[in-house]
Amino acid sequence: MSNIKENFSLASFTTLHIGGPARFFVEVSSVEDIQKAVEFAKIPRPDLKNSKGLALGALPVFVLGGGSNVLISDEGFAGLVLKINIKKREVLRDDKNTITLKVGAGEVLDEVIGWTVENIWWGVENLSFVPGTIGGAIYMNAGCYGQEFSEVVRSVKAFDLVTHELKTFMKGDCSFTYRHSRFNAHDKGRFIVVETVLELNKTGNPNIKYADLEKWFQDKPEPSQKDVREALITIRTNKGQDPSKVWSAGSFFRNFKLTSGEFEVLLSKIKKECGDSLALELKVLVDKVKAPSDGDKIKVPAAFILDKMLGLKGFKVGGGMHSPMQVLNLVNTGDAKASDIIALYENAQKLVLEKTGLTLLPEPEFVGFE
Image (cartoon, rainbow, N blue to C red):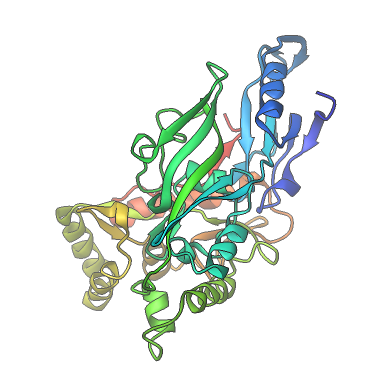
């Protein structure tokens, strides 16, 4: 492929603006491009060495979407990075109650959401202003403010890196759970998402049960779909979640999913550490943050632990910092290295374990680390 670049810096392709070079980098805009890139990656390269001086065989492949949910090491990635630019927006079926869309994996998620809101198609408005691509939203089952992307997915088409075939997965075959799909879990590294079919409703009611939205619309109990989108753009911007202004990977930490027994244990620890009022505050909060994939589990926002118990807003390591506006966001203040972000993450994980006994897990994918 003539457009493959060597030793290509990845920092500007991530919302954290962090990351060393890819040994090889290529932008793909079709299935044919993917096929050619994969064939390129299979060629053994005994004359090339990795960072440890070992000869490269077939190249590992990493698929990059919008770069919003990834932390790339300072050493970069000793393989081939595929930047997915497959664009497509097509109305497949327009029924009385629903609209069925085909959307390319390289489409910008928020631009697609804006399109659906303009047409008053309901189902993804609460994901407004979430950075990334459609492919990324499927890969990790993006979700926030009581809505998850998997709710509107009917099927996913993906390229199989083992058989080199296109395969179609119906929603039930995608293994969607909280921040998971088959594509980042048991089949991680095997499939490249190419496009998806979505089904949205032509009528709907705004989902404003989440705490931030409930507070925003306390004097306007029946907002329009457009009102919800505009509110979320403002809310996320005010929390420092505008990637054009603040360099971050978005929410860096996953929320906790607890059984009722585990939740009671956590409440007792909070009472002991911080008093009854904070425990009561959490009991009220968990009712306002429930999402479809929670099932019978109780979702405890990681932000509550990191902020209310640990006071980590504004805590810095090198050029990295817990955002003073949204503690879940680890931000690059201008000269952060991946090692600074890792240090922040490991510190938060250690403190949470000590105070609560819970294991804090990251949302972004770590690329190029040992």
